Length: 361
Image (cartoon, rainbow, N blue to C red; front, side, top):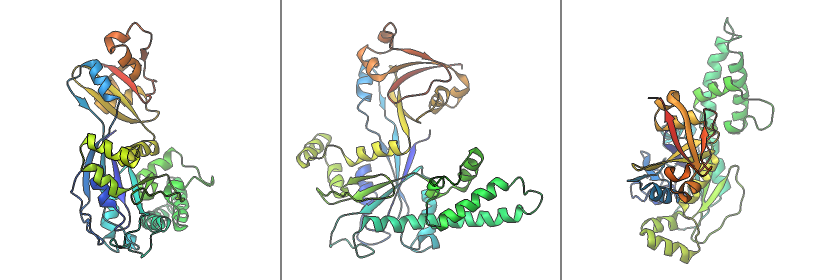
Protein backbone atom coordinates (compact mmCIF):
# COMPACT_ATOMS: atom_id res chain seq x y z
CA UNK A 1 0.00 0.00 0.00
CA UNK A 2 1.16 3.60 -0.53
CA UNK A 3 2.41 5.53 2.49
CA UNK A 4 -0.20 5.82 5.24
CA UNK A 5 -1.51 9.39 5.46
CA UNK A 6 -3.17 10.74 8.62
CA UNK A 7 -5.00 14.09 8.76
CA UNK A 8 -4.67 15.95 12.07
CA UNK A 9 -7.84 18.00 12.60
CA UNK A 10 -9.55 19.91 15.38
CA UNK A 11 -10.75 23.32 16.49
CA UNK A 12 -8.25 26.20 16.55
CA UNK A 13 -5.99 26.40 19.64
CA UNK A 14 -6.38 22.79 20.78
CA UNK A 15 -2.71 21.88 20.18
CA UNK A 16 -2.78 20.39 16.67
CA UNK A 17 0.30 22.18 15.40
CA UNK A 18 2.19 21.59 18.65
CA UNK A 19 1.41 17.88 18.33
CA UNK A 20 2.37 17.87 14.63
CA UNK A 21 5.72 19.52 15.40
CA UNK A 22 6.38 17.02 18.18
CA UNK A 23 5.47 13.99 16.05
CA UNK A 24 7.59 15.16 13.11
CA UNK A 25 10.35 16.73 15.26
CA UNK A 26 10.04 19.88 13.23
CA UNK A 27 9.17 23.54 13.62
CA UNK A 28 7.33 23.80 10.32
CA UNK A 29 3.83 24.27 11.78
CA UNK A 30 3.11 27.61 13.45
CA UNK A 31 1.70 27.18 16.96
CA UNK A 32 0.16 30.48 18.01
CA UNK A 33 -2.72 31.74 20.13
CA UNK A 34 -5.07 32.71 17.32
CA UNK A 35 -7.28 30.83 14.87
CA UNK A 36 -6.02 29.90 11.40
CA UNK A 37 -2.30 30.30 12.14
CA UNK A 38 -2.00 27.21 9.91
CA UNK A 39 -3.15 28.20 6.43
CA UNK A 40 -1.72 25.67 3.98
CA UNK A 41 -1.56 22.18 5.47
CA UNK A 42 1.81 21.17 6.87
CA UNK A 43 3.01 17.74 5.80
CA UNK A 44 5.58 15.68 7.70
CA UNK A 45 6.84 12.14 7.09
CA UNK A 46 7.83 10.08 10.12
CA UNK A 47 9.65 6.75 10.21
CA UNK A 48 7.74 4.14 12.19
CA UNK A 49 9.89 2.90 15.09
CA UNK A 50 10.10 -0.90 15.11
CA UNK A 51 12.43 -2.71 17.53
CA UNK A 52 12.41 -5.81 15.31
CA UNK A 53 14.37 -4.17 12.49
CA UNK A 54 17.77 -3.92 14.23
CA UNK A 55 18.11 -7.61 15.21
CA UNK A 56 16.89 -8.66 11.75
CA UNK A 57 19.49 -6.39 10.11
CA UNK A 58 22.28 -7.67 12.36
CA UNK A 59 21.34 -11.28 11.54
CA UNK A 60 21.42 -10.60 7.78
CA UNK A 61 24.44 -8.25 8.04
CA UNK A 62 22.27 -5.82 6.06
CA UNK A 63 23.90 -2.70 4.63
CA UNK A 64 20.88 -0.56 5.53
CA UNK A 65 17.61 -0.53 7.45
CA UNK A 66 14.46 0.90 5.86
CA UNK A 67 11.51 1.36 8.24
CA UNK A 68 7.99 1.96 7.00
CA UNK A 69 6.73 5.56 7.23
CA UNK A 70 3.62 7.58 8.03
CA UNK A 71 2.63 10.95 6.59
CA UNK A 72 1.01 13.41 9.00
CA UNK A 73 -0.99 16.30 7.51
CA UNK A 74 -1.69 19.22 9.85
CA UNK A 75 -4.99 20.75 8.67
CA UNK A 76 -5.98 24.29 9.69
CA UNK A 77 -8.37 24.63 12.63
CA UNK A 78 -11.97 23.98 11.61
CA UNK A 79 -14.75 26.10 13.11
CA UNK A 80 -18.51 25.89 13.42
CA UNK A 81 -19.93 26.51 9.94
CA UNK A 82 -16.83 25.19 8.10
CA UNK A 83 -19.05 23.06 5.84
CA UNK A 84 -20.77 26.29 4.78
CA UNK A 85 -17.42 27.95 4.11
CA UNK A 86 -17.02 29.63 7.52
CA UNK A 87 -13.47 30.32 8.61
CA UNK A 88 -11.37 28.73 5.93
CA UNK A 89 -13.72 25.77 5.67
CA UNK A 90 -14.21 24.06 2.34
CA UNK A 91 -10.59 24.30 1.26
CA UNK A 92 -9.44 22.40 4.32
CA UNK A 93 -12.19 19.83 4.16
CA UNK A 94 -10.85 18.87 0.73
CA UNK A 95 -7.38 18.23 2.22
CA UNK A 96 -8.90 15.72 4.66
CA UNK A 97 -10.49 13.75 1.78
CA UNK A 98 -7.02 12.85 0.50
CA UNK A 99 -5.93 11.12 3.76
CA UNK A 100 -6.48 7.52 4.94
CA UNK A 101 -7.71 8.33 8.44
CA UNK A 102 -8.48 11.26 10.73
CA UNK A 103 -6.64 12.08 13.94
CA UNK A 104 -8.91 14.51 15.78
CA UNK A 105 -7.24 16.53 18.55
CA UNK A 106 -9.54 17.64 21.38
CA UNK A 107 -8.47 19.89 24.21
CA UNK A 108 -8.56 18.77 27.84
CA UNK A 109 -6.02 21.24 29.28
CA UNK A 110 -6.68 24.57 30.98
CA UNK A 111 -4.43 27.49 30.07
CA UNK A 112 -5.48 31.11 30.50
CA UNK A 113 -2.88 32.19 27.95
CA UNK A 114 -4.40 30.06 25.18
CA UNK A 115 -7.93 31.08 24.31
CA UNK A 116 -10.49 28.36 23.62
CA UNK A 117 -12.66 29.43 20.69
CA UNK A 118 -15.81 28.45 22.61
CA UNK A 119 -14.65 29.87 25.94
CA UNK A 120 -14.74 26.50 27.73
CA UNK A 121 -12.68 23.31 27.81
CA UNK A 122 -14.88 20.34 26.94
CA UNK A 123 -13.39 17.56 24.72
CA UNK A 124 -16.80 16.01 23.97
CA UNK A 125 -18.22 19.38 22.89
CA UNK A 126 -15.14 20.00 20.71
CA UNK A 127 -15.59 16.63 19.02
CA UNK A 128 -19.30 17.21 18.35
CA UNK A 129 -18.60 20.54 16.62
CA UNK A 130 -15.93 19.06 14.35
CA UNK A 131 -17.87 15.87 13.60
CA UNK A 132 -20.99 17.80 12.64
CA UNK A 133 -18.97 19.89 10.16
CA UNK A 134 -17.50 16.77 8.56
CA UNK A 135 -20.94 15.14 8.39
CA UNK A 136 -22.57 18.26 6.89
CA UNK A 137 -19.83 18.52 4.26
CA UNK A 138 -20.59 14.91 3.31
CA UNK A 139 -24.33 15.58 3.31
CA UNK A 140 -23.82 18.32 0.71
CA UNK A 141 -21.88 15.85 -1.47
CA UNK A 142 -24.53 13.13 -1.10
CA UNK A 143 -27.44 15.54 -1.57
CA UNK A 144 -26.10 16.80 -4.91
CA UNK A 145 -25.48 13.27 -6.15
CA UNK A 146 -28.91 12.14 -4.96
CA UNK A 147 -30.67 14.94 -6.88
CA UNK A 148 -28.88 13.91 -10.06
CA UNK A 149 -29.54 10.17 -9.64
CA UNK A 150 -33.24 10.76 -8.86
CA UNK A 151 -33.61 12.62 -12.17
CA UNK A 152 -31.71 9.96 -14.13
CA UNK A 153 -33.59 7.09 -12.45
CA UNK A 154 -36.94 8.28 -13.80
CA UNK A 155 -36.09 7.14 -17.32
CA UNK A 156 -34.74 4.00 -18.90
CA UNK A 157 -31.91 3.79 -16.37
CA UNK A 158 -34.26 3.19 -13.42
CA UNK A 159 -33.23 -0.45 -12.92
CA UNK A 160 -29.53 0.27 -13.44
CA UNK A 161 -29.55 3.02 -10.79
CA UNK A 162 -31.80 1.31 -8.23
CA UNK A 163 -28.97 0.22 -5.91
CA UNK A 164 -27.26 3.61 -6.01
CA UNK A 165 -30.54 5.40 -5.37
CA UNK A 166 -31.30 3.22 -2.35
CA UNK A 167 -27.80 3.77 -0.92
CA UNK A 168 -27.92 7.53 -1.45
CA UNK A 169 -31.36 7.85 0.16
CA UNK A 170 -30.18 5.85 3.20
CA UNK A 171 -27.00 7.94 3.40
CA UNK A 172 -28.90 11.19 3.02
CA UNK A 173 -31.19 10.39 5.96
CA UNK A 174 -28.28 9.03 8.02
CA UNK A 175 -26.14 12.15 7.56
CA UNK A 176 -29.09 14.50 8.14
CA UNK A 177 -29.56 12.74 11.49
CA UNK A 178 -26.02 13.84 12.41
CA UNK A 179 -24.44 10.40 12.05
CA UNK A 180 -21.11 9.75 10.26
CA UNK A 181 -21.14 7.68 7.06
CA UNK A 182 -18.92 4.99 8.63
CA UNK A 183 -21.79 4.00 10.99
CA UNK A 184 -24.33 3.44 8.18
CA UNK A 185 -24.56 -0.31 8.84
CA UNK A 186 -24.52 -0.09 12.65
CA UNK A 187 -28.28 -0.31 13.20
CA UNK A 188 -28.57 -3.33 10.89
CA UNK A 189 -31.17 -1.74 8.60
CA UNK A 190 -28.86 -1.56 5.58
CA UNK A 191 -26.08 -3.79 4.26
CA UNK A 192 -23.23 -2.32 2.22
CA UNK A 193 -22.32 -4.87 -0.45
CA UNK A 194 -19.58 -4.79 -3.10
CA UNK A 195 -21.59 -2.58 -5.47
CA UNK A 196 -22.34 -0.12 -2.69
CA UNK A 197 -18.66 -0.09 -1.66
CA UNK A 198 -17.72 1.07 -5.15
CA UNK A 199 -20.30 3.89 -5.01
CA UNK A 200 -19.10 4.95 -1.54
CA UNK A 201 -15.48 5.01 -2.71
CA UNK A 202 -16.46 7.26 -5.59
CA UNK A 203 -18.14 9.72 -3.18
CA UNK A 204 -14.91 10.27 -1.14
CA UNK A 205 -16.85 10.91 2.06
CA UNK A 206 -14.85 12.39 4.94
CA UNK A 207 -16.98 10.82 7.69
CA UNK A 208 -16.42 7.40 6.10
CA UNK A 209 -12.78 7.53 7.18
CA UNK A 210 -11.68 5.79 10.38
CA UNK A 211 -11.18 8.27 13.24
CA UNK A 212 -8.94 8.31 16.30
CA UNK A 213 -9.03 11.02 18.95
CA UNK A 214 -5.98 12.49 20.65
CA UNK A 215 -7.08 13.99 23.98
CA UNK A 216 -4.53 16.74 24.65
CA UNK A 217 -3.92 17.03 28.41
CA UNK A 218 -1.56 19.12 30.55
CA UNK A 219 1.62 17.59 32.00
CA UNK A 220 0.70 14.59 34.15
CA UNK A 221 -2.96 15.06 33.21
CA UNK A 222 -5.42 12.21 32.74
CA UNK A 223 -8.81 12.00 31.05
CA UNK A 224 -11.38 9.25 31.46
CA UNK A 225 -14.34 10.62 29.56
CA UNK A 226 -16.26 9.08 26.68
CA UNK A 227 -16.01 9.79 22.96
CA UNK A 228 -17.62 8.15 19.94
CA UNK A 229 -14.39 6.58 18.64
CA UNK A 230 -11.14 5.18 20.08
CA UNK A 231 -8.83 7.71 21.76
CA UNK A 232 -5.37 8.07 23.26
CA UNK A 233 -4.33 10.61 25.91
CA UNK A 234 -1.24 12.70 25.14
CA UNK A 235 0.30 15.95 26.39
CA UNK A 236 1.34 17.74 23.19
CA UNK A 237 3.39 20.18 25.29
CA UNK A 238 5.42 17.38 26.89
CA UNK A 239 5.78 15.62 23.53
CA UNK A 240 7.19 18.86 22.09
CA UNK A 241 9.77 18.95 24.90
CA UNK A 242 10.71 15.29 24.31
CA UNK A 243 11.15 16.01 20.59
CA UNK A 244 13.85 18.60 21.41
CA UNK A 245 16.01 16.02 23.22
CA UNK A 246 18.48 13.41 22.03
CA UNK A 247 17.28 9.79 22.10
CA UNK A 248 19.16 9.05 25.35
CA UNK A 249 18.04 12.27 27.09
CA UNK A 250 14.46 11.64 25.95
CA UNK A 251 14.51 8.19 27.60
CA UNK A 252 15.74 9.72 30.90
CA UNK A 253 13.18 12.55 30.71
CA UNK A 254 10.33 10.12 30.04
CA UNK A 255 11.44 7.83 32.87
CA UNK A 256 11.53 10.81 35.27
CA UNK A 257 7.94 11.67 34.29
CA UNK A 258 6.79 8.05 34.43
CA UNK A 259 5.98 8.02 30.68
CA UNK A 260 6.33 4.48 29.31
CA UNK A 261 5.47 5.22 25.68
CA UNK A 262 5.97 8.34 23.55
CA UNK A 263 2.97 10.02 21.94
CA UNK A 264 4.26 8.94 18.52
CA UNK A 265 4.45 5.30 19.60
CA UNK A 266 0.96 5.49 21.13
CA UNK A 267 -0.41 7.04 17.95
CA UNK A 268 1.25 4.49 15.66
CA UNK A 269 0.01 1.51 17.70
CA UNK A 270 -3.54 2.95 17.86
CA UNK A 271 -3.45 3.97 14.18
CA UNK A 272 -2.35 0.50 13.01
CA UNK A 273 -5.10 -1.08 15.10
CA UNK A 274 -7.68 1.40 13.76
CA UNK A 275 -6.74 0.68 10.14
CA UNK A 276 -6.23 -3.06 10.68
CA UNK A 277 -2.60 -3.00 9.51
CA UNK A 278 0.23 -5.51 9.94
CA UNK A 279 3.96 -5.27 9.24
CA UNK A 280 6.05 -7.89 7.45
CA UNK A 281 9.79 -7.81 6.74
CA UNK A 282 12.25 -8.59 3.99
CA UNK A 283 15.82 -9.09 5.12
CA UNK A 284 19.03 -9.72 3.21
CA UNK A 285 22.54 -8.35 2.74
CA UNK A 286 21.39 -5.32 0.76
CA UNK A 287 18.71 -4.18 3.22
CA UNK A 288 16.31 -5.09 6.00
CA UNK A 289 12.97 -3.43 5.35
CA UNK A 290 9.52 -3.12 6.92
CA UNK A 291 6.38 -3.21 4.76
CA UNK A 292 2.83 -2.40 5.82
CA UNK A 293 -0.27 -4.20 4.50
CA UNK A 294 -3.88 -4.60 5.60
CA UNK A 295 -4.61 -7.61 7.78
CA UNK A 296 -5.82 -10.48 5.60
CA UNK A 297 -3.62 -9.54 2.61
CA UNK A 298 -2.57 -12.55 0.51
CA UNK A 299 0.98 -13.25 -0.65
CA UNK A 300 0.73 -11.91 -4.23
CA UNK A 301 -0.76 -8.58 -3.08
CA UNK A 302 1.81 -8.28 -0.28
CA UNK A 303 4.55 -8.83 -2.86
CA UNK A 304 2.87 -6.17 -5.00
CA UNK A 305 3.65 -3.58 -2.32
CA UNK A 306 7.33 -4.11 -3.15
CA UNK A 307 6.75 -3.94 -6.91
CA UNK A 308 3.46 -4.07 -8.83
CA UNK A 309 4.91 -6.62 -11.29
CA UNK A 310 5.31 -9.08 -8.40
CA UNK A 311 1.54 -9.60 -8.19
CA UNK A 312 1.39 -11.39 -11.54
CA UNK A 313 4.86 -12.88 -11.22
CA UNK A 314 4.29 -14.37 -7.75
CA UNK A 315 5.21 -18.07 -7.55
CA UNK A 316 5.72 -18.83 -3.85
CA UNK A 317 7.17 -17.36 -0.65
CA UNK A 318 9.60 -18.53 2.01
CA UNK A 319 8.09 -17.40 5.32
CA UNK A 320 9.45 -17.43 8.87
CA UNK A 321 8.57 -15.54 12.05
CA UNK A 322 11.10 -12.76 12.68
CA UNK A 323 12.15 -14.20 16.08
CA UNK A 324 12.95 -17.61 14.55
CA UNK A 325 14.83 -15.85 11.72
CA UNK A 326 17.05 -14.08 14.27
CA UNK A 327 17.45 -17.09 16.57
CA UNK A 328 18.57 -19.42 13.77
CA UNK A 329 20.90 -17.03 11.96
CA UNK A 330 18.85 -15.90 8.97
CA UNK A 331 17.92 -17.66 5.72
CA UNK A 332 20.96 -19.95 5.62
CA UNK A 333 20.44 -21.18 9.19
CA UNK A 334 16.65 -21.53 9.14
CA UNK A 335 16.32 -24.01 6.29
CA UNK A 336 16.92 -27.25 8.21
CA UNK A 337 14.96 -26.31 11.34
CA UNK A 338 11.39 -26.88 10.15
CA UNK A 339 10.58 -23.29 11.13
CA UNK A 340 10.39 -22.03 7.55
CA UNK A 341 7.21 -22.48 5.54
CA UNK A 342 6.81 -22.55 1.79
CA UNK A 343 3.62 -20.64 0.97
CA UNK A 344 1.58 -20.40 -2.23
CA UNK A 345 -0.84 -17.79 -3.54
CA UNK A 346 -3.38 -18.27 -0.73
CA UNK A 347 -0.82 -17.40 1.97
CA UNK A 348 -2.12 -14.66 4.28
CA UNK A 349 0.56 -12.35 5.69
CA UNK A 350 0.81 -12.12 9.47
CA UNK A 351 2.43 -9.41 11.57
CA UNK A 352 6.11 -10.21 12.13
CA UNK A 353 6.53 -12.51 9.12
CA UNK A 354 9.93 -12.36 7.43
CA UNK A 355 9.40 -13.19 3.78
CA UNK A 356 11.41 -14.02 0.67
CA UNK A 357 9.21 -13.87 -2.43
CA UNK A 358 9.93 -16.06 -5.45
CA UNK A 359 8.65 -14.27 -8.54
CA UNK A 360 8.86 -14.84 -12.29
CA UNK A 361 10.66 -12.00 -14.03
